[in-house]
Amino acid sequence: MLLGAVAIGGCGAQSTLDTHSRPAREIADLWWWMLAAAVVVLLGAIALLAVGWRQRHHAGLIGLGRLERHTTGLVVTFGILVPLIVVTAVFAIANFSVASVTNAPAVGSTSMTIDVTGHQWFWEVRYPGRGVVTANEIHIPVGTRINAVLRTADVIHSFWVPSLNRKADMIPGYPNRILLYADKPGVYRGQCAEFCGIEHANMATTVIAESAARFKAWLAHNAQPAASPVTPQQRAGLRVFEASSCASCHTIAGTPAHGEIGPDLTHVGGRTTLAALTIPNTPAQMRDWILHPQRIKPGNRMPDLALTAPDADALVAYLESLR
Ligand code: CUA
Image (tube, rainbow, N blue to C red; front, side, top):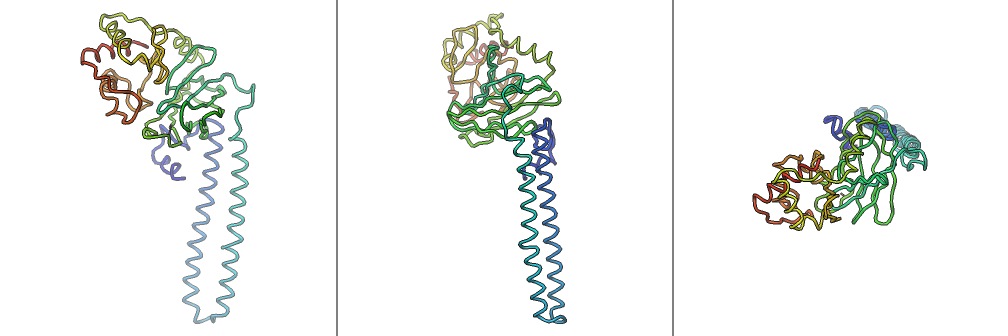
């Protein structure tokens, strides 16, 4: 409720009331119904308070016995009958919309399956059968039903893109599924919704819904191995990557780097953010991130490699060239 109220004021990036799919609309409708019921109850309580205050003043005139009978009637009506009706109505409405929202997409009803795996603290995104692996930024075609299979590599996370659907937990050993659908092209922000450790708050994601043609082009491009370094500085950057411990944690397809602890970096230069949306992906921010990972996202798994400034510059030049 509070989240919804906050969202009214600050519409846009991540809001349960800025809905772009049927499940999200049903959740928002339920919220509006509950708000309406709460307003009616609040106004009723205020009205009763006013009546009670008036009665007290007239107690002397009508006699205490009559007043008590009157009060018992009010208590039975507004303390038992009305709450019973309100709670039953909200329960019925909630049951109706929750039933249609909680169901995973029926087998065969979606056009594509993607695998999203929660890690402390980023999202690994795979497009099975297409050879595409990325992180944190999930591209989907607009107006297309996507079956997102949700897993975790460590603790419980919860995948939540409020404009598109409900929360869905990522539970060890128990894959969950959720429908991803956007009725309009756009960038929809999401957030891990289950406390998963010190950097839980910095575990955000975006769903980028784009036209079928743009999505196809993105998918084809991202299925390619990483671009080869062109400039001397970029070549030096690749050497730094392979010689330092970067390669033991990260994968860059087309190079010997096949680490699986951190995000896949094959096309990292083409992403708009780093560290699960913690910072924008600019050369200056990436350099800062590589040199001071624990200052930017304290507790995260990336160690400070104590690189020299020229090595850091070369590494940034190489990684930013991986479009
Ligand atoms: Cu992942 Cu909270």
